[in-house]
Length: 192
Ligand code: ZN
Image (cartoon, rainbow, N blue to C red; front, side, top):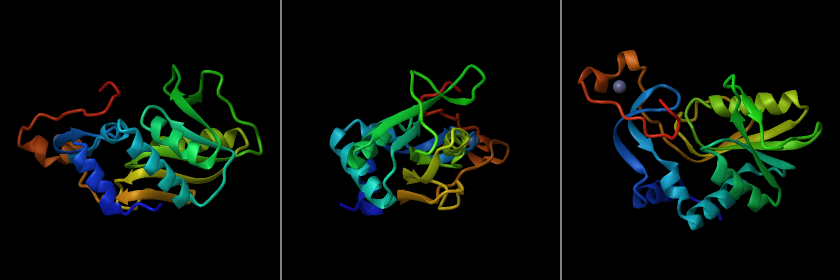
């Protein structure tokens, strides 16, 4: 079943995942808003329904769903469940490059979709797309629960999101919240 953007944001609010404050995003930008997808995906029924809706919105049938860890793990798994295919994920290696570990791999000629929880600049998904293409895999599309680029992120493949947020994001040098001396919080899981 399709999920409206409003119902997706409602779910974020109900689960306490729609945060207001002063946050450093994984892209390095600062923002007064943060969507903590992990708090939504902690509820298996929300993860499942969002995965199903995302699979439907993608409108393609890949051989494999690929996500960058950590953010893409749960939603990627649920999209793969809905599509009836395998889900694998990438991690950064010692040189901070996206790589397949744990015995994960793909075969040339396979078709993939790339799934993340939130796209801000799309940088992580772009890295996964490059990795897949270098292995001879065709990337059919990319998807995320939330697009916080206001629709502007260009991954070079068709892209869908369940909800789009035109969120304010500042370069740290120009951040008015920093200017007011408000401490910045790193809400994600990666070390700052
Ligand atoms: Zn700031």
